[in-house]
Length: 50
Image (cartoon, rainbow, N blue to C red):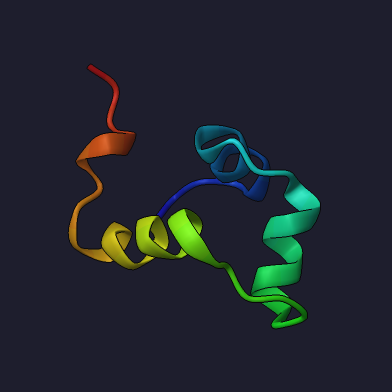
């Protein structure tokens, strides 16, 4: 995606530690976070600058 962990976490309002837990597989995203992450590979426009 071309974003740092800090940039990604900030863009989605999550903590960097939460993102790292997800990446390591210690925790799995749930609810709205899971839906959003499933949509990202197909549509990065919400991340684009206006």
